[in-house]
Image (tube, rainbow, N blue to C red; front, top):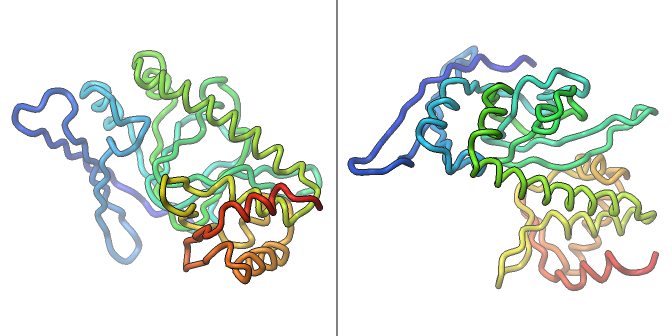
Length: 262
């Protein structure tokens, strides 16, 4: 399925007396085959862009382009040209790599507000992994020249990138350790512990829970194994599953299972 054609209309709203960071909104008209729909996106809700000056934001708005992708459509192909930094505006994406024997290995899940493709832009190399849509998604493309301008001219963006890259290295290290666990059930328990949202005073939750097949790809096991493990956790009262949300009722029990012997 081909991506819909997307037209960008830019709206800039500034309150009287506001200094340099008035809300910046992009209005997108999606021209589908049957009818058109309009979506408004506040660019300052994207963490990397939140603190741009008005001059920097104008440069972003001038060059930003939006595309809609259907579920399972490829957004980035491994080995492709690194001509843009990409922002996920809505939906969910999965970063995958293909092994020499043709197996798909999930590297991470991307959620609304995340950006990706920065490494290949910084190193002027081709894309190191593929990205596929887990649902219908809207993705913004910022050309590499504009991206590199922000990286080199905005101290706030540069500082954000340093923190982001440090956290990404830590996250990737944790995930590599997960994949080295020989027991598939323990990989599933550890995966849930890694991706849960941790808020003080509340049980851990996993919003927009990936499908069993997508989890299987992420941790190199079968869909049936994931289904059995989640069912067992539910029966033990450790987790509670809703439509696209998972609540971890007993995080200590989950951690003990993840750290237990095989």
